[in-house]
Image (cartoon, rainbow, N blue to C red; front, side, top):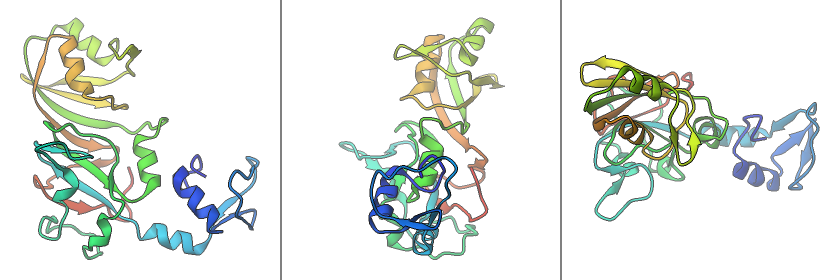
Length: 234
């Protein structure tokens, strides 16, 4: 079910136990039931309705907030989500509800000293799409740096560096202006961009994520948020 994009693995277990999963039209309630590749898996209408009510929020995270679990002296980014901080040009039809904070989790990290687009979601399907092991979603960043970068160093940023004993996937790195680089990555190791820059003699002094897949930060103000619209896709 997770591989077919119906839900997350954790959600699949709960749906099966509740009898909300059908295989070739037959209701399945036993965890671990084998399904052939050609069989059709569908969700009960009640499960579809439940999924439709889950929200995904786009936040312009400021520096000084952690993406997930709060650390000593710092707050989690989710504390910025509230009625008063909603972008007033948000075109989503739903009214803000405190229920939208229940189970809301970041789909990917953004360091405490970085700013930009952070996705928080109640929907396991979107979380898997963005941070699953086989995710190919691009993330785009503007990175202000200090130091000198040779052509060979720029080439290494694009492909040829390793972190934690593993070769990094090819990236797209180019100069945005004289002191700012544009990074496009398809992976997200801890503090990856900062560590990549250190390997080629650069110091990162500012980092901003401006895009995840097809979703851009755009003119969303710092510290404000909006809902992902029904027709928007990563």
